[in-house]
Length: 334
Ligand code: TRP
Image (cartoon, rainbow, N blue to C red):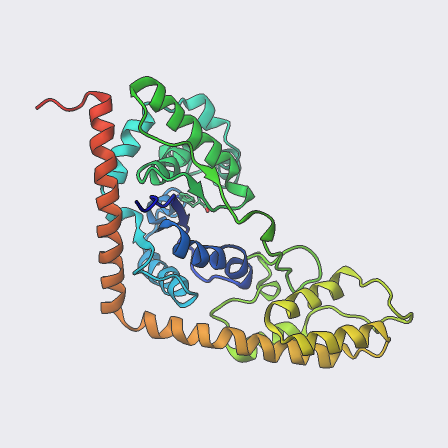
């Protein structure tokens, strides 16, 4: 008999515009997982309401994040790719789990405290129960593996607590979900400003976005910090130079990388040439993805089909869980 595949679930915030850090850090893992696990990848549109009550941009953002994920290799025929708000069972389980979550533990959550500091004028109850909604997304599919970054660890721990509490009070329904990222192979994608990793910070020039036009890509790369080059053979690279090599290793051919490594080691490297090459290789890598994204975005019919298909798969799984939940809770009166 075929072994049942483990269930992977993760949520993607519809804040739009993925950058190379997202691509190599998260997305490429999702793409690999969809062949090995039963995967649910969800656009967290309801979560975004906790901080963005204005929904003018929501539709465009949801479409973009779907298009960017598909263009990067997520296959709606393999994984369930869906919107949170299309799975109504989310609201139902969220309500039940809220009864198991203590306000004290919710108030102590780091992300909650941060948000309160950032937006003291909009400390709504949805913000407080954000971790309950996230636990709902995961438990709704009885998922055990959750590919997320470090910043979501606390939420995930809370999901385990809620699952555990439910199981103890009402009977064993939920596995306790753990973080999952193919362990050691998480790629570091540095930013173009010399330090740290690529992030969507205030400075748009440190990140390369999948939506960036060719000229923008070239310009950003050319602006990266360099110096006059090493003066001793085989000297250690300063961080901002090492970062350029790291970026090169993501997109350039082995021969090209070797040439610049050798040039560096022999003190004849010309950073202008290196950045020009890196810029071209980045354009070569990003532009087909960007064009694919644009193609998908212009095909609303296709996007609608994707969302319908995803919602259907997700709801089937959610409904099966809700039967077990209601049975366990004694909410089956007839
Ligand atoms: N909170 C996650 C983030 O900010 C997004 C998210 C929502 C999520 N629901 C989830 C992640 C379920 C993993 C599982 O990135």
